Image (cartoon, rainbow, N blue to C red; front, side, top):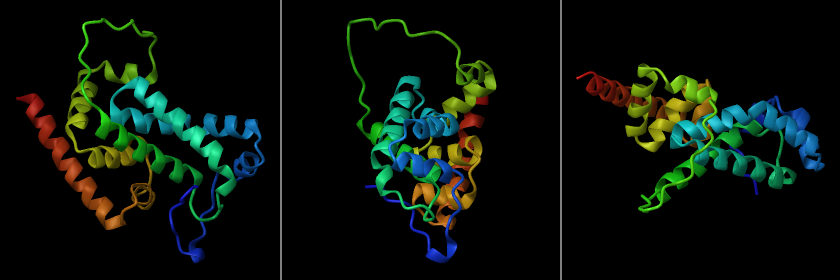
Length: 191
């Protein structure tokens, strides 16, 4: 069952995806396709920046859209934006994946993956982007999520706090700590 962010009724949220929610509830696959067209980049991007792995991010994104499709009947419009809920599901799935991540030791060489460039490959080709990626990977998962939401996803402080399921002041504090940690890690890269 979907558990949207709790917002007092006086502050009903206008959802830009309201036109698709009714289609999702009716089982219209075109509504799901439209939702994927609108938000696949945001969901995949959040997962990619949290996990740092393309395949894992794709799996998380697919899982989030499948969960949205399966639980659309229970969605209550006006309580939160559908994208906010989807980003929270993405963040939680990434945190779960990071907790379960263990090194795999094998003597077998894996098959070569598709080498086609994605937008993220193009970004990572510069030295600066590589340094930022290394610094992001060193952050605590919640700090990485907060920075990704704020800087890569462009969500507001209020929406970021809702996605992270924390207060706005706790979210701002998390961002401050994340920025300080990033600065420290980037300065270490220069030495």
